[in-house]
Each structure stands twice: as C-alpha cells, then as structure tokens.
Image (tube, rainbow over all chains, first blue to last red; front, side):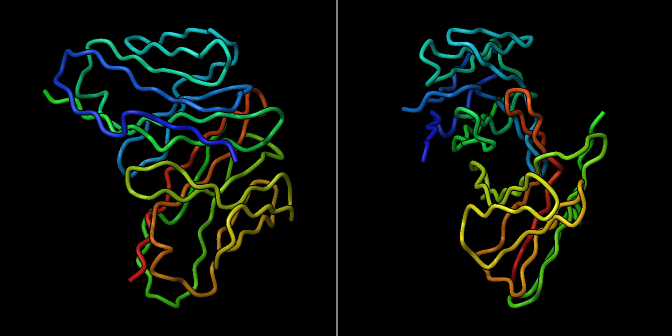
Length: 111
Length: 112
C-alpha cells in the first residue's frame, strides 16, 4: 500500500505570509494532484504534475514535483484569507485507476 | 462539460436503518466512478470503485455496499447503519488523462 505523508497537518498564519506544504512518499508516482477543499464541499482539483522536476504556477501558488517523482510541494506566496482550506495531495502509480490521498494540511490564514 | 451530482446533501439516520446515497455524472460516458469517506479535516478513504455497469471493486470490508445500475449512476447502500458509518461521503469520476478525479459536493451522514 502506497502512503503519502503530508506536512504540516495544521498551519495557521497571518495574511501576507508565505508557506510551504509538503507531500512525501517512498513510491514513485506517474502523476500527482493537489486539491483544495472547503468545509462541507468536495475537493477541487488545483493542478496535476507528471514530469520529475516540473514546476507549475497558479497565481500565488507554486507546485513542484520532485525529480524522482516521489514527493511534491505547494508554496503559497502572500497568503490571503481566501486561501484557507484543506489541501490534499494525491498520487497515481503506474496504470492504477486509484489515487492515494495524503492526510491533508488544514491551512488557516488570519486577516 | 462534465458535472457530478450527489444527493441527499445531508442525512440523519438512526442506527440500524438502511442507507442509499446516489451519485450521477453528466457529460461523459463510461466513466470510472468512486466512493470515498472522509473524517473531519482528514484525507479520503476509498470505499468502492467501478469501471463499468455492474462492476464493483471493494477496498474496505464493512457493512456498506455499492451498485452501478446505469453507466453514469453509482449508489452506496447499507442494510443496517452503524454509528461508525457517520462521515462525509464523496463520489468522484476519473478522467483518463493523468488519472485526475473530480468530486461531487458530498453527503454529510450522521448516524444517531
């Protein structure tokens, strides 16, 4: 069974600060997704990374896939209260139809 | 474009009662469909997935079952609910490219 470990589990910061969330595994992933979920709603896909070393930017969010495709990070610059939510990483191995989800990082950005 | 629906949005049921949660997808054919359960503020636990009508794979043995009577319909059921069945239930469909999954709005189930 593949495991995806996310850290930190909880993060509370002030508006304007920067932060990084990490997603680590001993498994190699063919693709890795990051989702953001608000209370009472389903997760929303933010980005998919597929190539080792790949970096993708979505406004103030920067996503990086590790060179060995075993880990990923999400960096948020100048966080805003609207960034508050549960961030989940999820990875797919080989041709498997399932995703392995991390345990999530609950981010709170205080105004 | 594709959309995914779940109902009901919330449900409060007594222990021992039956359960039926429904998920439907629009705008795609023969999708892979998934049922997940999520504890508060935590990751997702895969319960069942289906690659086609009548084809169900179970990931976690429990008192829940799933069925896929139509191509774009996925149902989660139980004959007798337990307290431990409380949680947030999410349905998702998978896009083949890069194994991306897209989620419905979820059903909050409380078993009393």
